[in-house]
Length: 145
Image 1 (cartoon, rainbow, N blue to C red):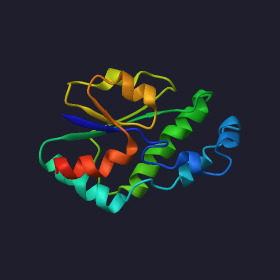
Image 2 (image 1 turned 90 degrees about the horizontal axis):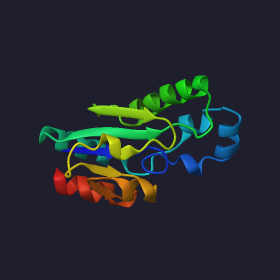
Image 3 (image 1 turned 180 degrees about the vertical axis):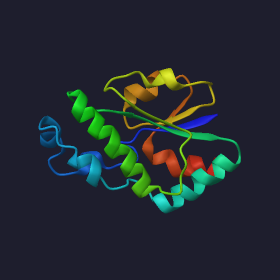
Image 4 (image 1 turned 180 degrees about the horizontal axis):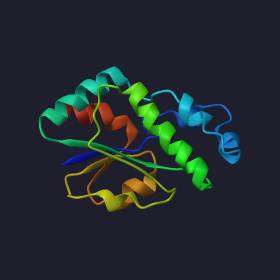
């Protein structure tokens, strides 16, 4: 079993950053850098470490900008890794996939037990495992820990 998390709008308050769309249009990665966590990360990190101790893998599947150039996508990928390390430094991710916008996330599902937390309804509907909304993260992790 693997538990996957989307980033923007799921664990990172990307859409809460003032001017996020203007920044994307200008190839400015600022919103990815300054987005605040959407859940209590101290608690989430403890739960993630506990589920990993039980043999459950954890991962990220996050899209790049819809209209990003190769250079901007490289910068966004770097910034997303930095953001994860900054906000969840004790978490050792088993998988991190930063993929082109619109890439079908269900391609990463390995079993019907895999869980995806994602704010995008289409990604949840297409997921071949268990799909959950962001507001179910802590409750689900607590139950698995």
